[in-house]
Length: 106
Image (tube, rainbow, N blue to C red; front, side, top):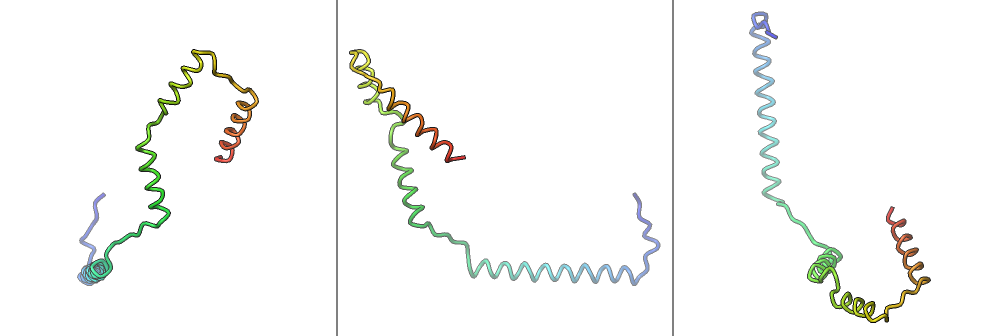
């Protein structure tokens, strides 16, 4: 789409230049203010005590193995020897507790 610029008069062009100069100086001033405030304040952050505790717990858990191989070996041995007994009531209670905890997350 072509714009016919022959209809512009000198006053309109001067007004356009004046507005753009005004906007340019305003943006320069605002960038100078922003630069000064950045220089004066600077970015900073503080880690709360609770966040530090969580970070420590995360580090400790990351160092632990995902599966307790010693416990697995003991259970395998007990099953092989016929010593491993399952308590159905305890199993049902644990499943119910687990499901209740899952429902609380939703």
